[in-house]
Image 1 (cartoon, rainbow, N blue to C red):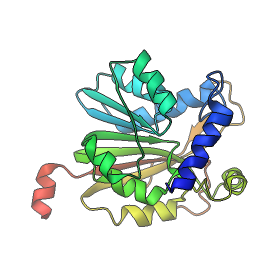
Image 2 (cartoon, one colour; image 1 turned 90 degrees about the vertical axis):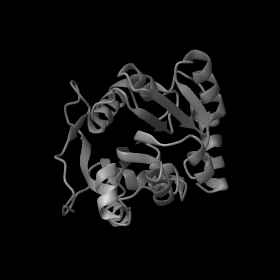
Image 3 (tube, rainbow, N blue to C red; image 1 turned 90 degrees about the horizontal axis):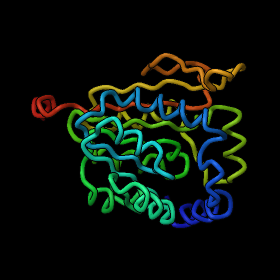
Length: 237
């Protein structure tokens, strides 16, 4: 993100979310819980894997991934107060302050089998961020992202509200970007929409697809990009 964009979100955090009784990214615990469950399902088995939670906030997803026996979990955020609190409370996870748009920082924390990017891409230069983080995926690993869909009318209102600081992609733009990545084994996305009856779970999800769908205006997009394994990379080089 640009310096001004990053500062705008740091200021917004301090103004709105520094009180820990409020939710950083979600309206309630049910929305957060289902979102994390969808992300973990998309990641596949996590036992023995090295995982990065970029934009980790207060660390709830990082802790869930650690509990699923990942070899190492690294939580990253630009909000130093959140990271310092996580370091104090949860020392079994590694916590770092840094930006996903800083290639030197991303290289410094190493490569990962799974990178989670949950509710972050709309707050940064999402193209640059995905390109940088793709380089940090180990062969055979994958990126799992959840991001608002800019084709959705509700999301468009949020984009207008934040006037340039909140910039979400749509399926067409994501397809065009992923086509530029080297060593992609496969990729797919699905939609998340709020249900009319939310007593069980808030969202209903659409099937996975890699094809563009007419009038695909789900509220959120779940994205998985899988990198080729070492054997496939050597064969194609």
